[in-house]
Length: 422
Image (cartoon, rainbow, N blue to C red):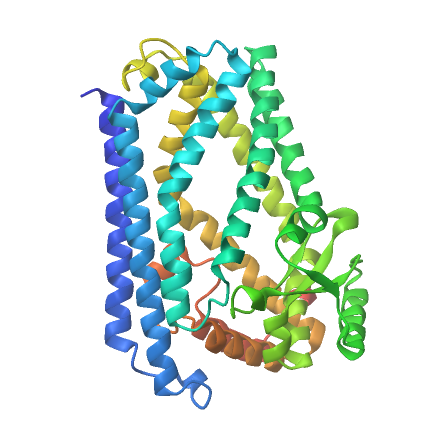
């Protein structure tokens, strides 16, 4: 077994071990504390609801572990079992040329891996989510969504790969820089198009009809100096009872989207507090910072990929008789999967920092933390969130501070200067 094969197996074994250990820690935390209602949720969450929260967390956690483990084992089998050289030989025999061959190679693997994921998605949607009263989607709608997802993904991925491999063919020595510039531009284009072209294919978006709430949101946005092109409601309830709100788009497609389930279950004050938090992300430049960080990291990754795919050892280690650039790029994405997971706490820590700053901004904008605290309690109850995550598990994977900690911090904001006054 070559050194690269050993490294490959070690990365996947370590990632699987870490994921299993984190899950075990979270299960232990739930079993030791999951029957106790935190003080912040007394009067909001009863023992029956707390039990459902615990059971939902355990069910989704188990499903996630099984899915990730199965997916990792499938990738290991594909890479070490000789399938990739076989597929590469079959694609090469078509004589389609470098660019079409690269697109076909990636398409075939994406479709194959997507098929492996379908049973888990079906089980999660129609068994787990149904059992806990969330899933409202019909099989017909699910199938239609799947077909639309395949078509949209095919168009987007096909366009990206075709241009990417064309740049590789056009500039063998400088493709990494050209491809990186294209990658950044492509990300921005998709972000701009998503709210007005892609999202409406799956959900119905209508202008917010509640004049009082519309006026409150408009006033809130004006006070931040952020101009949005529309405030919409989304028919989320046709698929799930989960509740949320979000900002989407860039430039002229920037808009606020409210789930219909959020409107049904929360007061105007709570909704405005949630949106004040989201406005904080925009006002404090979190979106721009994340885009800049993504661009910087991707530049390093593109250059690293350029250096790696020129080494024949990458190919001989995994059974390729000769260099195949698109196969080498796929091998690098397979290596990146466990590495990205193991490094994910860095992104989680940054995300939690941004969330705390947005909470500070929402407090300063609304003058009180009460409405946001009330909204978080309602969302936690409605979405059956975990109130007792293991601290190590939360540190490793949570993009938001654990709910109880977040609420305690919000309640203490009145005792210290707000973020916007610093």
